[in-house]
Image 1 (cartoon, one colour):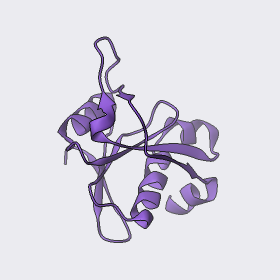
Image 2 (image 1 turned 30 degrees about the vertical axis):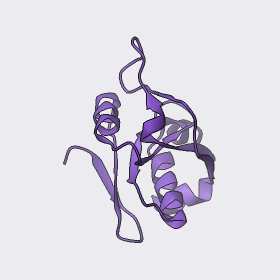
Image 3 (image 1 turned 180 degrees about the horizontal axis):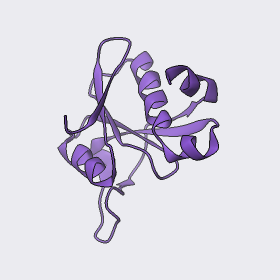
Image 4 (image 1 turned 120 degrees about the vertical axis):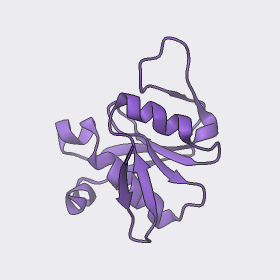
Length: 120
């Protein structure tokens, strides 16, 4: 399997990058309407949740994204996750591998420490 995958409680399988080059691949392969997640802080996988996403699925995917982040690894506290569509992602010349800009995000999810601990 190219990407890290995780099954949500609804049975939906989401995909996440494993490293910077894998994040490049994941974002590049996403469809314009796909919902993507990434932590507010650098050092997390990009997570592709797909097009039709239930509120419950978005929350679970955010917890998964946060649990795999450097922010969680280093601080063991609440983690902010950004939610946006692939069509709002851009890459400028000179940006580091695995780094993208986002024109606008749909929302922010504050993932609580206890939710991440329950996932592990």
